[in-house]
Image 1 (cartoon, rainbow, N blue to C red):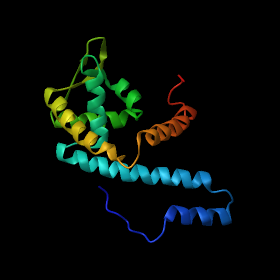
Image 2: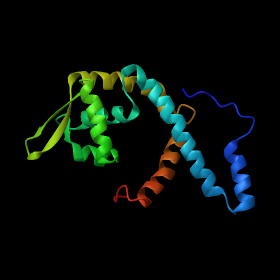
Image 3: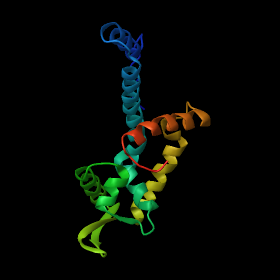
Length: 169
């Protein structure tokens, strides 16, 4: 859990007031700033929950993705697409998981040039224990009800569609 700032005021609301006075409408700026701050808070909390398992959220996501695949392995390029990260980030993540013996690399039998990342039995075990901890903590979202979580996901989905994350409705 991140250390509370305990400020006597909401700095985003204060910035929105100042923005309003200097530039005009501040609704979008305040919303983006709040999203960015929430991302920092959630990442710190989730990484704190995952640290005892030797994971970061990025490494956890890769393990989950591999565990979802039929054979427990995926090409590196597909991992990048599904996690929506740059190929360099995928390589770094898989390097670290491989050093922890949670993932192995092997040649892709369908493509002589490609490489597969494959989750190991240890990787599955760590991922399952980490998932139990994240589920218990409700992924840092325990303060919200089911309807609120659905509404929030729906609102953010619109941004993702507009950014081209996916094309299906």
